[in-house]
Amino acid sequence: MSKPKNRTSTALAKPEAATFPALRIGDHFPAAIDLRPYTPELLGDTFEHHVSSAIAATFARRGTPLPFVPSPEHLAAIGVPDGVNQYGVRELGVKIGEPPTEYDLEADAIKLKIERFSVTTVNEICAAFAAGYAVRIGDAFLVAYCSTEDGFALALTNGSAMSGKLAFESEVQVWKVERS
Image (cartoon, rainbow, N blue to C red; front, side, top):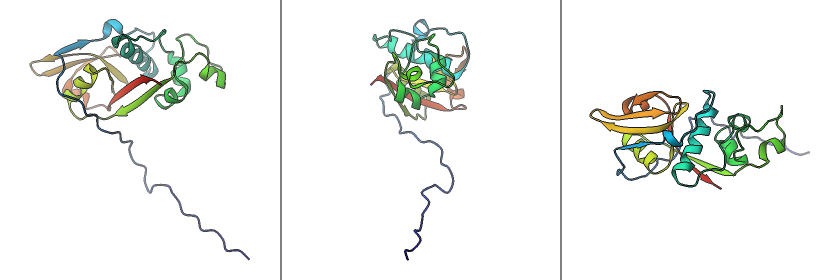
């Protein structure tokens, strides 16, 4: 007669918050950067619309624009950022089935990789943005900043503006977005 197998749980006692490596970047950056001319204005105000605009602006600023604006509908179907790492991005206007098929998720997609980092100061936000990273503040992304007497003024993809001090009232992440 065999002994019953003892199972040990590998689950954590309580869920931990997602942690990201700290971004190590220099403190030298211009006094102002404005990517609004590179940022497509999309009809809609969802997180996926903001991701689409931020990805398009990030590549345009580097001088290597994507051949299309990423589809917010596709981003919603795959999930951001993990789905982007798995499937890539598809063109604005693509039709997604319900439920999406493997073809819906992969056909004509450009493969991208998104790495997330944390930052703790407004200077790190501006330095990361100046270095070509996408900066997520809450559910929107940074598209412009300029230094002021009181610190920094920030403009976001959702059309709002805030001071650098207010940025940390929301979740702040830096996204390194590259073609994979």
